[in-house]
Amino acid sequence: MKTFLFTGGGTGGHIYPGLAVIERLVSTRDLRLVWVGNRTGMDRSIVEKAGIEFRGIPSGKFRRYLSLRNFLDLFKIAAGFLASVWIIARLKPSLVFSKGGFVSVPPCVAARLLGVPVFTHESDVTPGLATRINAKFAKRIFTAYEETATWLPAATRPRVAAVGNPVRKALYAADPAKGRAFFGIADQVPIVLVIGGSQGAGQVNEMVLGSIDELVGTCVVIHQTGTGNFDAATFSADGARKGRYFPVPYLGAELPDLVAASALVVTRSGAGTIWECAVAGKPMILIPLEGSGTRGDQVLNARVFSDAGAARVLSGAEATSANLSSGILDIFRFPAVLESMGRASARIAKGDAAEAIAKSLLEESGLPV
Image (cartoon, rainbow, N blue to C red; front, side, top):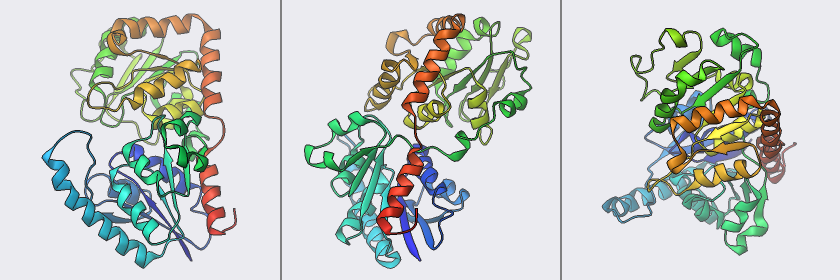
């Protein structure tokens, strides 16, 4: 039996796309799938919940600023490397596939030193630090966007293949009728779905609350606030909003059906979320995360969708409740615009990236595709 070793973690954005690739591999006979991730944090719970074997390693983080933790984390990184060497030497995988994140670097370096082929994938327009390091050791570098290659060293570009972002099968088989039924929404009423992420986004929540009175006369708003930001008193609906505003802390298995049912999605511009919406052909209003705490990846992700005509972007001083409500209502006034944005969104996400990556991995290992 051959073994594929997956690695990545630190955030769901570094795990769920990898699990989407695994979805396309689980039916392959004589194949063992193992995930190497951070031994603390969310990695283990997400991976094991998906039924995948998990191996935890110590993990340190690469920071772009001066911090004592950079020095202390060197010891964690070294320990993670030694643990990765031990795991790979014992499991003897046919290949290692990385979805990025700081935890993925030691397994990729260890794999290269032990002669195991490395494959990696970058979800954002600009490659993160972990991807830039892993790319040096990778036989193939998968990206979501063609232009990502221009952010990598010239020597690595011949190994780049733009395939899109892997998303779970449920997005391709979503049922809008089930999405409407989940909240009991009539067929003729348009739905605006607000996705703040599993932890929520305070800025997005505030913008929605400030615009909800203007919106409920035209559409139903389903608002994922984030479990850490949900307050029943804050998000309670008054009489005027009854039946038109549904704030919930978290959306799980029902999310694909709700995306399919929505006429428009309001969200940050994290790579995974916007690609899932694009697979469903959804117009978007994007509110990218900005500031010193980010490398600007969401701004560039949003720009790709905006330039393609698939989304409108509210950033900086434009990210206000008034602009959010007027932007949504303006789009709904012109059905042709809404349809055009949806078509543009679908064009970006054409093809099944998870299927393409899985096929490449199987071909590399000599297993039937």
